[in-house]
Length: 138
Picture 1 (tube, rainbow, N blue to C red):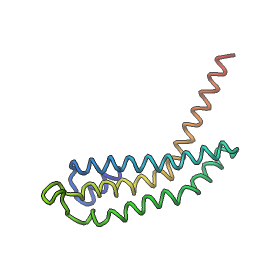
Picture 2 (cartoon, helix red, strand yellow):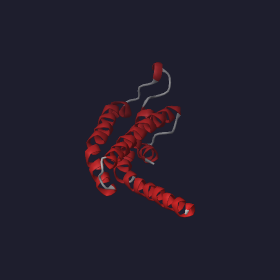
Picture 3 (cartoon, rainbow, N blue to C red):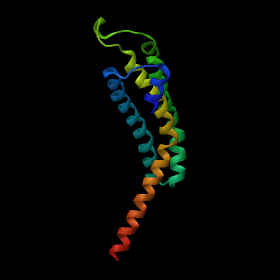
Picture 4 (tube, rainbow, N blue to C red):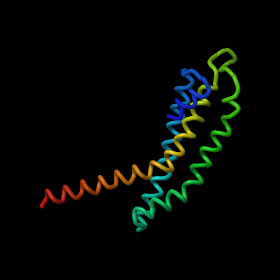
């Protein structure tokens, strides 16, 4: 969604370089999600209740996630503004950079706010499934 809105706002056409940017973006976003969820799971294994583990995990991993997003976005601003082309006469780099910047700005918010809610949903689903299996086994 962030890529779409950023491309719409900047008037950028979707190209092969934009697709490459989306692939790079997927890697960064998945890594941010893993950083958060892995830490929450570690806190739960240490004995913290689910809600406290989510709050503490979000608070403790917010800085690394924001630093990843900020450094990537700030580092790509020159490419977003430039018109440099691959090999001098090949495709331009700016669609790739704009895809990463727009998508990362949007996904960082989603990672920090929506991902914990998704975690709660799937944890409840897992608990419900375990209860159903136990009830059927009786």
